[in-house]
Image (tube, rainbow, N blue to C red):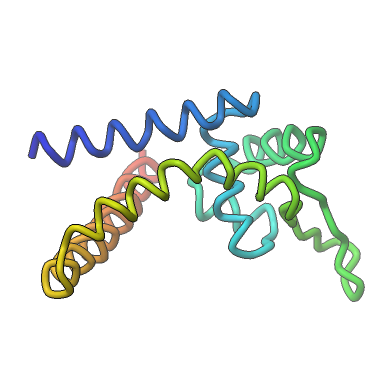
Length: 144
């Protein structure tokens, strides 16, 4: 589907441009998006991103040095470390997406409720397909 491929490429390129504007890697921005939803351990971040433990450690080190995240030790289990995004830095990242959000909202406003429901259904199902195919690729890589 050429249209879907073009959309996917444009989304990836936008994330890359946003990351570059902040002096970050695109993977850093993806991790920050996950961490802005909820704090998590490095292991959870590795599972969600597909990165190795060493790659997650390097990513978190970079983000911590630039003030985007903080490592927090668990009060009950000092071995457990949670990574939490810095709200002020997430707001800075969100500002880069503000123009896109406004234009996307204007685009979606052109559709009536029934058309919007179809679009929302497609996006939800496409997201499920992407998640399933991502897991499949990761499982195939692990078996090699």
